[in-house]
Image (cartoon, rainbow, N blue to C red; front, side, top):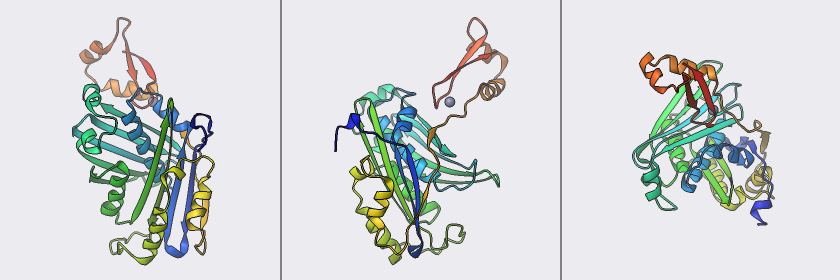
Length: 298
Ligand SMILES: [Zn+2]
């Protein structure tokens, strides 16, 4: 690999499907957009890494959504660890996320804390909000395993009965973090199929597709000289047919507005609001996602 600092990374989301194997996938690479989200906070490097992985995961899952305004939210809530909350979401190519943590507890963690030591006893909630029908699908699984990616794989296996393989890679250097990911899954009933309860977990088609996906090296996901299309081609060029479709344009997207915070504050009792206000009667509220500060007149 060439000099990391001078390499050009683009933000990219790619969809693909392999009809003869009833499989589909998403590939993602986050460059400038990741820096944009991470730079709103000063996180220790272990948390940057964790949030970067979470943003790759929401983009991979969000890339499965089809309708305008559909939203994917991933939330990890912990107890007894350094991190109490991690929230990320995806809507129409816009991603955002943040982590709530205890600085003292975090400082005691080494450079490579385990998921368990970061979150303690925790669970992971994944929510699909479908704009057109107003329907919400939510699955909750224990936050266990070696990484967030493994926990999301168990979410698909347990809550949706969809065999899924996920790979993520994060590369960071001074002042720079880039990330990439691949998700492949087996949908024998077709993408719109509802009856998935009888899916065998290891059908030969899936075994074939997942073994090929496993041959992907982590470095390839964050190697800018290799496009996402080339990655998919490298893995699946021997298949009868691979359909490729570009995903949404990715950007950092926060939906915070002064109106939203006014509405939230209006639900607090008058005395509490007075305590929060400064001498000029203004309450300063900052958005947890993007750190923008909103002065709200009490
Ligand atoms: Zn915001």
